[in-house]
Image (tube, rainbow, N blue to C red):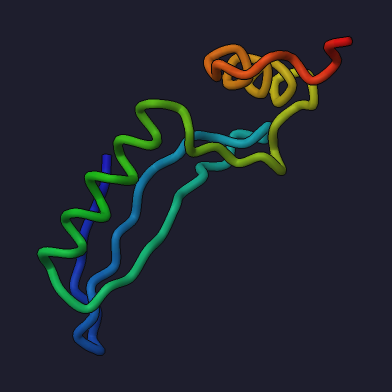
Length: 85
């Protein structure tokens, strides 16, 4: 879920909850913009990325999870595997 707030300097801040790290700490994605309308669009876009699991914190991801995610994306593409002969 995204939250949008107006900052003292007149800009808008978007905060989206991404998940938790290995220690249980909440992970968030932040963005700032100059208009409320644009902030709402950014919030929708980030929420969609989180929902589709395309937005992740790679630095906190296990290598095996990253490889699995990479393979899933690779299989979706219509390209032949890299190691063909």
